[in-house]
Image (cartoon, rainbow, N blue to C red; front, top):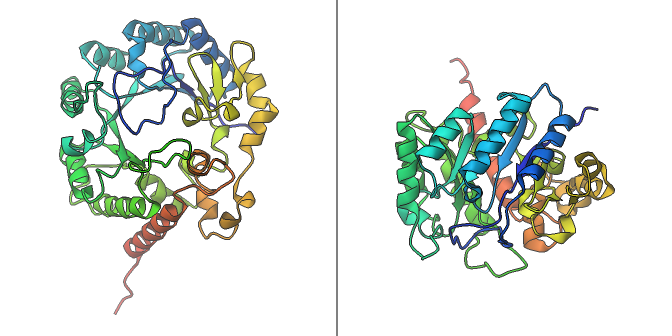
Length: 365
């Protein structure tokens, strides 16, 4: 069977110009991925992938724009010359504080899909997404988004659902709805290895927020927001009977490979720095060897049948035991249920009911 294409996640740097208290990149080390290494990795993954579909490259961090604009000009120019602009799809996730006209022009020229971390209106965003000096970053980020729109460059937003969000879901949704910004959201995840209990939200709290946001999205008076993730994914999963999100993939590591600045390979960006999940290093191993090694094969094993609580779940074929990193982060093992297992059940139940009600045809007479 043809293996799926590998979506490559490159972390050119692990440093950041912000001090967000919920950041999962806990190993913020100096250093920049060498351009020759980045090119070699891209070339190997492109050769490994099926050329019928474009190879997707995610530029991630900490803050990837700290690699500087000339770094990306070189990479984007090289990939365009080597493979063609439509065969490599660059995507970048930034905190948005360093964006300016030069970045806008580059992203437009090179067809770069851009995501910005924006937790909602200022009162919610600034609760956690702070500058190094402790000041809030909302004004800078939002003004940069507005400047980008003047050049017809549109960003999606990535939202972290935190304690600051709870009880303010309407305010959050209205902000994105009024400003016509497509967004996706994720919850803060409890981490067993360090104390973030005061930041993390419970599965019940996350379910309540997600369900409330689903209803706001599903019943929009004017359909301004097409895809609010993961709500769109929950909906498509229920409608089509299969997952459409990495969180619910039977084996998410089959689709992704993350490379840290020093060439270390991980199955996911969230496992960066976790020595138990190192798959190899591109300085002394090929992509093909890393992808076919036993250590990766172990990670790819489906988890559902190995987790007692999942085997009898009504939603197991759509959920597939959820995110292995969420399980590891909360409980220290990927062979545990996703911390938000109960959330997913409640959300799937709610989405299923809403869809059934919407599709119900009134009997004649």
